[in-house]
Amino acid sequence: GGEHQGGADDREDPTPSRHGRDPNPWDRPANGRKGGSHGIDAIGPPGHPAGVHRVVIVTFPGLQPLDAVGPHEVFAGANRGLPADDRYAIDVVARVPGPMTTESGLALHAAGLGSPTGIGTLVLVGGGGVLDAARDEALVDWIRQAADGAERVATVCSGTFLAGAAGLIDGRRVTTHWARAGQLAERHPTAVV
Image 1 (cartoon, rainbow, N blue to C red):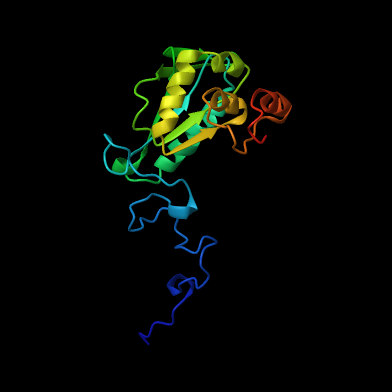
Image 2: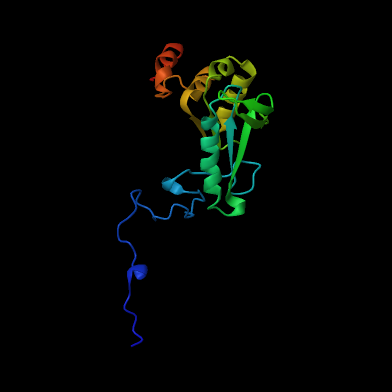
């Protein structure tokens, strides 16, 4: 017989994903969003090709390198599974462009801040230099402007201090490194730490 008996590869999984959608996290629903409820939702900001989502990672002297490299690698890794015209555009920036010396002595290259518009995800990193960065009025003003138009703002570890300096955490529930939680609560009493 040429009759097909079926097998594991032929069956549809009757169990919906934990999000109630197709278990493929890279499907393209009708609304045009990457990842849907499975991962990082993204729509290209104005001025970028359709599907491109601009991720801006803000750095400063004395940053914790993992706070910048970790998110960069997550988005770069996601790009490996996406078509070339649908990838994340990842920018590592600082108020003063050039090598940013991290708290461990590693130098990371950062571009200048550029325009605060057209940002999909704004990532604020932490590290030993975060309190000095939070006193940098030009940097904090740029963060405030960028956050105003960004689709989302994320802080990593003590990067919450930058968000606080920009007025982004008032009345919000936030986290930071456990060793700095008291200091954050003291500096930003309207935030729920």
